[in-house]
Length: 134
Image 1 (cartoon, rainbow, N blue to C red):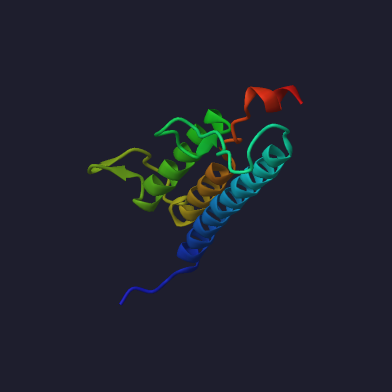
Image 2: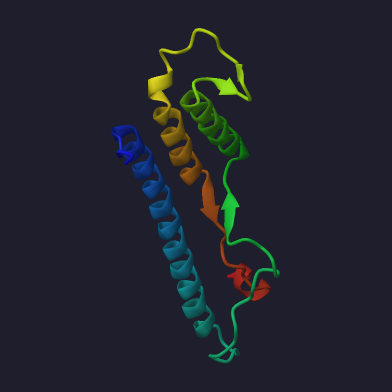
């Protein structure tokens, strides 16, 4: 039976931070939409049931704040995975004398996941031309 190690717990905690951040972004998006809907009801000459403007179909709800941070986070996670495999890629050891770094594989993976969590943002709701003027 495999034992859950401290390193694995650190990686699981980093992934939990990532999902918590995504949940916070979803909540923020819903609050923004609710505020926009309330603002739209106060506009004169519009019925109360007018729908909110929608993003084009197929548009993801999240946006990337910084592609540089995404590349850095993916690079860190890949480096951690390579360190976990004792610096072997397809039977080829890419770094010969790096066995001292192998026990610390979980650090770059965890840091990469947390950086990725903060590199993602939400899309702001679309405003009508009338609302942009206000």
